[in-house]
Image (cartoon, rainbow, N blue to C red):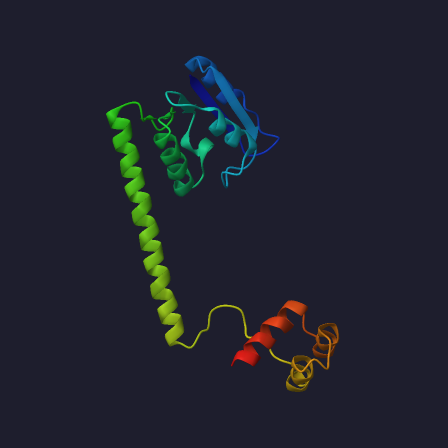
Length: 186
């Protein structure tokens, strides 16, 4: 079965041009939506992915209609390949039913992997440079109130209920428990 997916980013845009292409291609079933392609959390995309079966072909006017990020595109296509569902993009002339189309997809995949590894390497190098300059990462350390030691001693000996200890310290209950655990262990 030839299954089409069409998408525009906003409600005021129309799907006419993509619908015409689907009609010209003889697509059997079309999934359409007006939603951003920033991620794959799209109802009609999910419905289409749940519908297609082995031997089906997904047709899109352009890969940007299916996914905006290379990673999302490759994840979707990897899933489809594993399920033996083919993919055709009209604009980019990618057709995984042909050896050439699978080759182009392999190149896309390799480039995305290189991009990801390069990004991680630069990130790692940046973190090392920042750490040598004394920059700390993560949440700032919680400053304990002046009465912390006194309140903790009363609470840990059972002379003060948790609700009262939390009130006296001004900490959130979760922060109180976390700090108490750290203080009593260390």
